[in-house]
Length: 100
Image (cartoon, rainbow, N blue to C red; front, side, top):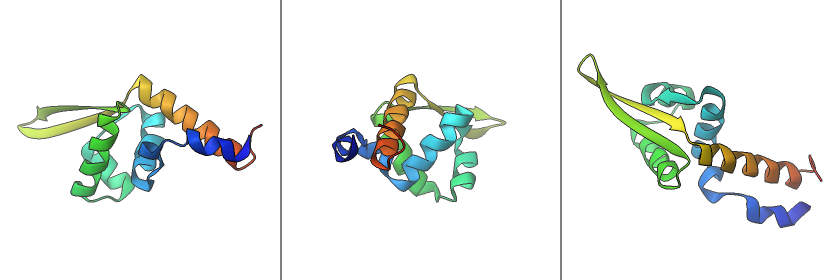
């Protein structure tokens, strides 16, 4: 397939931080904000911006609650996000010759 797969590269996922979020959530299904911040070595503001972009695309769901009177933000990959991530991985694989 080759370069024709460039059109299948989702710009929302392709950013380094957003890709890291999707990789982590594709394995874990969900994570709290602090966990993602630590694993991805992100600042609070940077992570928030990227999560918002993924949420607007429908790729993650964000649930806010409280635990022991402290805010808790939980992020989960959505079925749409899982599907989009699979398409993204297939396209990347095709670009680098991993698939025909």
